[in-house]
Every structure is written in C-alpha cells, then in structure tokens.
Image: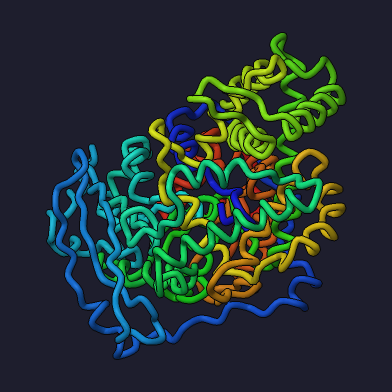
Length: 549
C-alpha cells in the first residue's frame, strides 16, 4: 500500500497467494454505507484538476510508439516503451518502462483470440466499443500496490488464477511503474546495510538511540540519491499515472481498464482524476484516501493494524496453541510485554547469527496482519519467541521486506520510500516532531503506534522536495468506478474506502465484511462475482452492497 511513512506497504506476494483460495461467501445490499464526502475534508483540501484532453504536441511522439511484444517468462509476452523523465520538460531525457502481457485466452463460446505479438488490437477491442458478449474488451492493467510492488511479477503470479470469463475477454497487462522492478529501478543500500536499516531501534529511549535512527534514515536517503540521480525527483504517482495513459494509447484502448490494489488504488484514482474521460472499467481494492495528510495517514494506518491485531487476538484465544493467554486482554498484555523485552534484549535466531530486534519483531507481526492465513504462523512464531528464539518473527519480517535467503533485497522498499517522499510533504521534520506526535499515535494503536510514528521520520531527510500535496479526487464525468473496502483491513482502513468512494463523482462502494488486506480474488465469491460482472459488462454493483465470507 502507499505508505505515508517508512515501511508499511502491500505485500504483493501475499496478494498473489491469496488469489488461489476463494471460499464460499454471502452478499447483501443496503443503504448503510453512505459515502458522502466529509464536509471538513472537502473544505480544507483542493481537488485534483484534470489534464487537457488533447495530447500536447511535445508528447505526441511518445503516444505514437509501436509496442513490439516478444515471448518471455513462461508463456507471457514482454515489451518496453519510452516515457519522458519529466513531463514538464520532455526533451530532458527518457525512461524505459517494462510491461508484460498475458494474452486473452480463447473462450468456450467462440470469443476472439488475442492479437499476435506486435500486432494492433482486434477491431472493437477498446472498452468503449459496442463489442458483443464474446468479443475482446481490450487490455486490463493490474497493479498490486506498494508503492514499489512489481506489477510484472504480480501478473506472472496471478494471471492464471483470474476468472476464465475475464481472461477470455481481456489481455492482462502489468507495467512496472517508473523506479520499480524492471523499469529503471531505484536502489539505495547493499544487503548488509539494509539488514542494519531494518534492525534499527524504532522505540529510541535516549539521545544515542535517536541519533542512530536518524543516521540510518540519512544513510538510506543518501544512498538513494547517489544511485538514482536526477530520476529520484520524478518517481511520483502523478507521473506514473501519466505513464499509464501513454501505455493505454499504445495498447490501442480508448479507455483504461484497471484493477489496482492498495497503493494501486491511489495510482488508479489519480489516473481517473487526471483523465476522467478515458476511464473505462476501474476497480480500486483496499482504497487509499488522498485527502489525508501524511501525519493523519500514518496515524489512522496504525489504528488499522490495531484493529487487525484485535481480530487476531479474538481468533487466537479460540486455539489451544495461542501463546499469549486465554483472553483477548491477556493476549494484548502479553504482546506488550514481549515487545518490550525484545526491544531491550534482541533474541537469537538460527539465521547465521542474526538477532531479532524489537523493530523487526513489530514488522514480523505487521506482516502477519496482512492475511489471516498467516495467523497460525504468527502463533507459532510468538510461541518460540516467548521461549527465547526469534527465528519465526525474523522470517516474517524478512518476508515483509522481500529479503532473500542470500541476504539480498529487491528494490521494493527503495521505490516505496522514493514515491512516498515525493507524493506528500514529510509528516515530521525532526525527532522532536515525532516525540510530540507519539501520544496521539499510541492512542490510535497501543501496540504499534510508537514504532509507526518513528517509522515516518525517513522523509525528513529526503534529498528532493515533495512534488505532491494532499487533495481530493472527483474525476467528474468518469464512468462508474468500483471502490472495494474491507472492514478490518490492517493497511488501508475501511474508512479510507468510504472517503475515496465519496470523493469520486461516480464512485460505488463495495464492502467486504472480513479480515486481511484487500478482498478481490482473496476471500469472497460475492466480491469476486460483483467485480467480475463489472469488468465484463460495465454494470457497477449497487451503492452499499456488502459481502461476507
């Protein structure tokens, strides 16, 4: 997901895994989910203004490129295309973006096959056409979130799990946003230095610990600047959304069809705000709220993880192997005691002498909040941690960061920070600012608030100024946009979905009453059915529709 601070993001691998299992579910509809935009938000935040509908002459060469698809990666097709590094100064240099496509599969009722590599789309493939029930609908772009999640890796993991009816009608396309994955990836620290960064104390109790945290944040920022250069100032979401419009045109689609999860909802909503007349069938699952500033975003996100922890605790006490007590209150108290102990005395692990620090313990627990299928692993990890072994929580923390067995890290967290520090002004400018905010964070989240407040300090030392600002997104005149919110989503609290759906002129809120981060393709056949019907027909679910397991 889009992190307002340092590290809380969408676990793309978890989203991919979750798509493989969809249990039975139920649905309901009703007026309970009013989505009117809160007056205080509307009064204090300016809207995102659309760009001119006509493509500027200076950008025409980018829109006139021809995609050449080549076989790659086990049956997929790959391509690259150019975008300007700076849309305001397109003559100053280009970036090369990489994309992958899972071509539409032939349908059982005689649907047209996908176009061949390098060929233009089939007639009538644009989402605005009057295609028949078996005709192709064009391309469906997917983004798993982050920022920093590779859409290419995500698509390769999930393409074959998509409903066959959707796979029949669409080419599924993933493009790594600028700075991410295979698209000019930003890099910041070596694996060894990243190990140190993830271990630094996020509950500094004295000036020495604060100085160590500040030094780690500065080292991270300096490394990004040194290795990325001028591109570091051009990795924001508005630019990534403009890149998607170039790709939309090169794919031959009149309108953009898009499924975005977590931060991908912010990317998709930004596209809708900039290009409302080019919105096709857009689904925003696990929605971000662009009307929140970075302090409020971090604080309410901490509250989301607290809500998810409460759900875990409620479930934990039902199991004989719950290691933290027999009541929900005991579970909470024992977690506090464990984290306090680990912050004071890191635990040994079986991983080459590495020790579990308090910040890594918190990160490991946060990782398990993203998906309830990880809760049994968390119970096991907490059990051995209480016995003095940090291996289980350290593995969960490593999975959160994507750390490989060889100690290497992907660029996910580097891109994550680079995008966040451009999209909004830093929440805090100094350690003193964090210290003043900690009480509010702890009220929102007694277990995670303090760590998450200190996580938000990194952007204070970012070498380039933020180019974005808090705003609302109306996307006036856009086709219906489906916003999916999960009631106990840890990383994108449900209220964010309500707010975004209320901001969007054509927003339709679809609620999943359940646990975990995002809903489509993970838990509920009710959600899946509503979203798939929308993608295939353009008919959005009725406002206030609710689904459960």
